[in-house]
Image 1: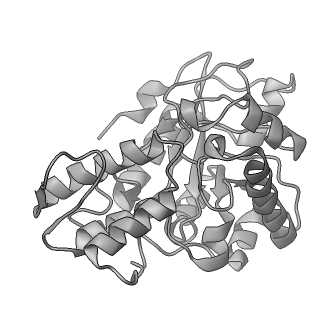
Image 2: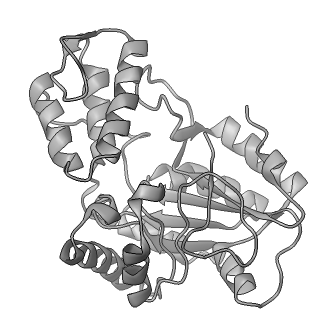
Image 3: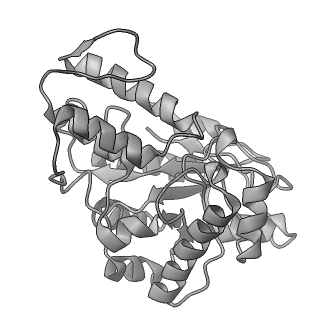
Length: 301
């Protein structure tokens, strides 16, 4: 297991990026990248960080960046993207026990409809289909996918291809994979697929330990959207969050969050809606004075 405390520094601060926490991992293909951490690993990582560093919130990072109270040495913040139900039922009790603040960035369509992301749609189809071929633009010639290892390699290739191509609609791509694999409907896994209800989002928002932020409406890459689509994506997500929890929303995170997924144009759109900070998913640590819309995070997997 990675020693995440080794990223902590006397003059830097670290933002850790997580997605979900599950009680046990029983899937041979899905969750191959540990997007959902097993509970025992999650607990051990947080306890180690608390022993070695000083937990802070994203609002504290913003305040310190604007000249308020400085951050303590070896400061770190915990953040979750997407809005999986397990952050409420599995992760939040651990955070509360440790008195550890966290920020939850929600994709609002996931909450509205318990909708899957395009990645989860593809992961699901690939896992449940025992043996298959796929006709894909980045695969030369027919290839059979019939083992967990081959399927995991396929999923990694699909992620890289879709995320690097602005002309591809990721949900149309997922639907094409479903068509080729003859998958008609997704039976959500209660641990990997269930999203929070608005009632549970409000319960997190009412806890002073936690901060709520936006993470788009449909989880499309913001930089790949037209200006009109970008405005609609951001406005829809923020309007839904603000109306459902009845609190200001000043924090955001970019879907996917790598360097090609956001830009000055995206940052300007977020600022126009009152957002003050949006960390990326680029790997690294930060110093006070760094751009609050280009902060790096360390993925916990």
